[in-house]
Length: 258
Image (cartoon, rainbow, N blue to C red):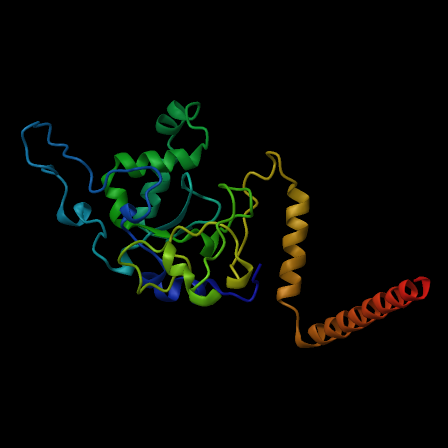
């Protein structure tokens, strides 16, 4: 939708402002974090296990350099329509486990969303994944059209109908973040010039080609150059004048008949 955006300026130049680590802020899968106790002792204190303080922390070490995986979440959990990985030893290890035949092939018939369900399983059951995983608001990298994940929630109006109503969707404590509509915004918003659109589920009762064509036309219109805007203004003005003249002619004819 916005080919002029660069990933560096849109996301990577300020990961602390554009991502969050604590899955409890938006947790449609209801994953417990920190993980529950794994010591095997039923009488042990809560979270008494082998995990180090960094793994137990909701935000890892809090440093953007330690982020190796960035993924959005939709209304149902992790969404791999757009995600980012950093080339690292940690990433190599994750990919090896993610696609390991002994692991994946044993469960792939149970996992409706294949590799997406596999990643959710690893995140839930392998605590070493969490300190290096960050989440990103979906509309920044993977906005949905109307009909995917329910109806479009739109951008709430601010006081007096002005902008700024997105704060009503932000979880507590995130008012200082540079996110439009917080982390729960899912559907594409033209007024916010969202980056890309994912036609998720368009093959189920929706018109894939129609949606893609409409968004392509919208992108072309939003990203017109100055000359194209002037030409369109001339055309729209001429069309409006012609329409006004036609309506005036019809009114005159109606008066003549009376």
